[in-house]
Image 1 (cartoon, chains in turn green, yellow):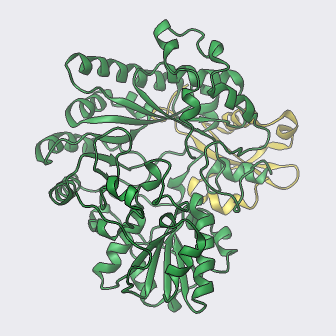
Image 2 (cartoon, each protein chain N blue to C red):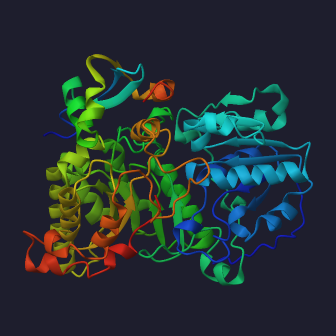
Image 3 (cartoon, rainbow over the protein chains, first blue to last red):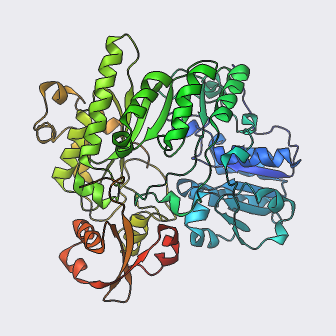
Length: 470
Length: 69
């Protein structure tokens, strides 16, 4: 296991700096594992630059605890690059401002999902000299070599297939920034996230979920792209294991459980060709599980898919329709019953049963108390579950977000995008009801119709602790 | 009700009486209006011109964002 720890006054070698974005201090004294996960966009693009002879340094807003610390690290560079997501937009804007203060003639180029979905907000920030919408892997080298040849707003160009992507050089990711964090980080792999054994290797096999849920809509902005070949995924995992020792995997795909022919090849090759059948986290939809149940069950039983992330979102058909989820209560219940049954069977055989990573959304405009009770009731039907509960957040770029912003009902703004879990995000939503719901005040209503065993799941206050960033 | 494998959804842009547009989605324009009514008040629904709409691609969302109300 490699343990590394960077000091802010480390010697600089380059004139170009990547600014890794996140909340201040996340790599110094993180609240949880997810803040420590690394940015695959940064890793991929920085790898491409280095393979083309363009050497960059990296600093991180997550590796400092004050903006003054960041300012000292940014002095002396000619160019800053950053990958901006909506929830890192405030940090990106501040970092760009500081970069310009200390390097008045320096150039700041920013891309990423927020640049893609909300270019108007990016264009209002004078510190961004170039804003790249969409994928950047085919434009980044030319942009960095000759930024003056590009307009301020650039249409990015992506690869047609992930097969064209190089393997990320993970040593280009930022390092943990305190001795305490570095001891457990496993850099350049990543820390344990609460289930599989460390070190964790996060990886992408596909890009973009093709469905149209109106709280996301990533498919509106990123073109379809060929999936990474199964052999290439396994080859990278084996490489990481040979060099750093892999303990478990997080497949970061927005939607892992799609493309049945790829999944069948994964079932055939992963148990056979991987150094070890590392357990993994990956995502599905309940309607895909219902469509291909045998394939789903084979993945669990034969490949070690033991943390099954499902975007259940709601236990109410009314709200699933409102979210354009195109899944139903019946789809959700089918998936819960299947994973409960397979889990029981595997437990009887002495094997580790699969668990749900259950993505749940509350505080959706139009949601009634009974809708919310149905959602919590659905959660209690899961025998083995890590609940991941968040309040609906109307981000620009999503269909429902655009509409709620236009109606003047959003409490989020470009000044306060972030992922603090208990923030109030939409006008007219009774957040006090949800706080009391998660604290257990309405357990009698939630437990209606559940079995005695199901009512005992989720002790009072448990669900309040599982409120996560959104 | 069927899920995505049996009944695809579409996006619609309805005109509003104030000249703006309302983004909606569903299996049909009628279904999209029914879904809108889940979260909008009767007064807000009354501002929608129900037979004045276009079907849009989700890839064109950004193009229409400034016209929403």
